[in-house]
Image 1 (cartoon, helix red, strand yellow):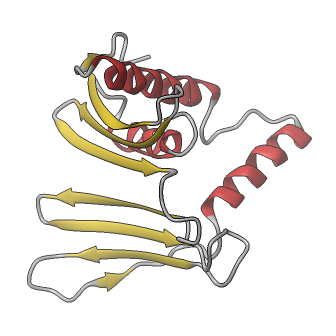
Image 2 (cartoon, helix red, strand yellow):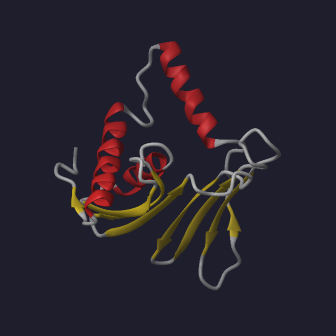
Length: 167
């Protein structure tokens, strides 16, 4: 939850605000780790879901994506590494809009690895002494609070209400 899913949590917080409640379940590795998690969120009436896993086959390419279902269509972003690791092969980066009755429309997306760009941005902020304007400390704290609430939900088997969701 604090490794892979944290990026998805942060994205959903950015798009919809932090959730009021989360319910999570997953594969308990019986050592305090969760190898596969699914998190359902309620962001002021917007329903969200996250799936993150360390349990994929070792040679399965790293993949991430998001779908946003709207009243008049859907946006979808997919990223997949070119091989078993991010350093192998040419990655797949797809961003498209689907509107009912129309052909899918490909939207422009920056080439390469979004996580790599995220880290490079953070390093530039540290090197220049500038406070981040994207993913601030408050954003990180919010994502961590949601992740810890999701972990609490996995342990209890019950939904968790997140107090102070407006942070």
